[in-house]
View (cartoon, rainbow, N blue to C red):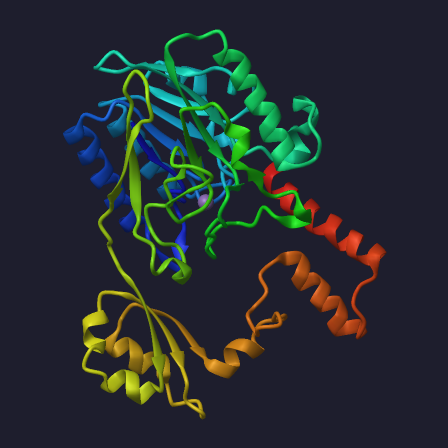
Amino acid sequence: MLHTSDWHLGRSFHGVDILDHQRGFIDWLVTYVEAEGVELVIVAGDVYDRAVPSLAAVTVWEDAVIRLTRTCPVLVTSGNHDSPTRLGFAGRLLASSGLHLRTGLPSIADPLLVQGRDGVTLAVYGLPYLEPDLHREALGAERSHSAVLDAAMQRVRDDLASRDGVRSIVAAHAFITGGTDAVVSDSERDLRVGGIGDAPASVFAAVDYVALGHLHGAQQVGGPTIRYSGSPLAFSFSEQSHVKSVTVIDFAHEGPPDICAVSLPVPRPLITLTGTLQEILDDPATPSYADHWVRVRLTDARRPDDPMGRLRALLPHTVELAFDRAALAAVIAVDADGQPVTDPLAIAEAFVEHVTTTPPDEVERELLREAVERVRIGGVRE
Ligand SMILES: [Mn+2]
């Protein structure tokens, strides 16, 4: 079984279209699945980058599922970037062709049963991204990710109780935290507003493998069998050190599965260069980054003439240029360490303080929180 997630088809990198890189990943994936005889592919959410994907992104997805389902079934859950209705369109019809879409509550306890070549049967459950405010009523749960996931997993466990001799797998798109801190990057849309964001790995107790999507760095949470595959491509410079991979899992009739991360080709590596413009231009190593995505932090005391033009003459894929001081002045709020604040609620609070000279009181904070959440949910509800 192969586990991947967070394809974000149609996403751009600092304004540059990367659909060719995404097509390249799919070519690699199709070749790997055929060559290795993979028997199930799981895509754990965030197929698309946005709820209304571009025509080009839809075409790439169509091409991917047509080619993959020639070899094996594909199970897909919707992520917080996907529109469940659009991604899930014609789901029951497509299931007969090997594409198993899990984008809503009714299919949570409807496992895909896969009989492996070696006689092992997998029961694979797909949990879409569950927005608490949209799903808590139907699930009879409190208003938190932890509570809705727990209620969804109860449905899974109830179904599983009636099935003997299967290996249980859950695919889910959620922010799960384990014993150690989850490693987040800048390209994941925040789920933490209002403190209802994450859920403990323990909600998946008694499942043989949990295929997670949402965090873009490959990592395990709370144990080796609860894993994020990570995204196939880097979507931000904060992922510069990631080794992008898909996760391949092999099950026997019993015992823990064999799990390995298979590294992916890197179409364009990331590099951050720091120094004065002249230092960077003169560095003998600089030309070797001509095929990289380049972020430059200039330490010049005075703004040099046409820095981007001169950098791009050597490094055509320079996509971000910042001056040490200017970079800080350009953001509306910084934390105690001088780092930009990206939490929308914190930015709104800093703005109130900026215009009124006093921080928001409890009532104002509550209003801001509600407003931020309404905007966020609006994007899901469309
Ligand atoms: Mn994502």
